[in-house]
Length: 307
Ligand SMILES: Cc1cc2nc3c(=O)[nH]c(=O)nc-3n(C[C@H](O)[C@H](O)[C@H](O)COP(=O)(O)OP(=O)(O)OC[C@H]3O[C@@H](n4cnc5c(N)ncnc54)[C@H](O)[C@@H]3O)c2cc1C
Image 1 (cartoon, helix red, strand yellow):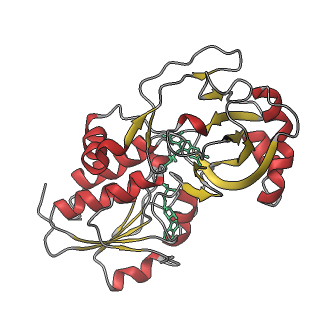
Image 2 (cartoon, rainbow, N blue to C red; image 1 turned 120 degrees about the vertical axis):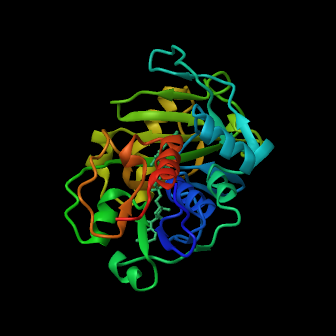
């Protein structure tokens, strides 16, 4: 691929795809600036410190099936990568296939932070109009979810993302109910589509507590999307108690999070974009951490920026 020395490239969004583009283009000699609207990195690969715990309320784990992603993750994170060793089951309790489920020891958003080490990143920098960036940069690559990118580029989005409500619930006491032998239940299509016990992530949950994460299915999420996130736990609590065989009223605290643009159901065919504007992100493949990173990595390997 051609040398990009002297080219100034703006990248919108410091999620996995934006970081992969930034790394790849930097390696080709470009002067790259990442601009992220939030304070932290990772986008939907999100973690937060909550009470005395570290919780992944976005991507729960990641796979490393692709050798290029594995190499990059291992080089950036080293022994902070931890493999989960308890199964994910379907609604009937059968174990689902496991090609390796990995987490970052300190919270999954740290995967993004480690992969971004050494890159120039402007955080708390929300771009309102991508065209105005062309005064300072030669090219603009947006990794914001497609509806947001389309708005920034001034074109029609015409592509739907699925929403997802997330709820995190904690109780005092360790390993009540079915939590010890099972990391998670995956039940696509159900109201309670995903329910995981965060205690299987070593060092994340303070001793004497158990924390469960629930993700609500598409129909349920759409129905309740406009409620306040603080209202979500009350909607979900009894489903989680019943599923995990946890005594009623054991949960002592909870929070909810709204993912309006959580995932894509099928890959987006990217329409013709304005000159010097580009898009990368999970929407081009599928909504997985590894796939998001690959879209950015492949874009950086193959784009010449010559036309
Ligand atoms: C609830 C949930 C659970 C998931 N579970 C899993 C899982 O278990 N395993 C898995 O592999 N994947 C999972 N995923 C999918 C995975 O998180 C995503 O596919 C992946 O993180 C997408 O990365 P991305 O870089 O394409 O987009 P994003 O992570 O969305 O990154 C886009 C970035 O752009 C920033 N941005 C947006 N607009 C602007 C603007 N105007 N100016 C500046 N910055 C902007 C955003 O703040 C964000 O940081 C899950 C996703 C969700 C929501």
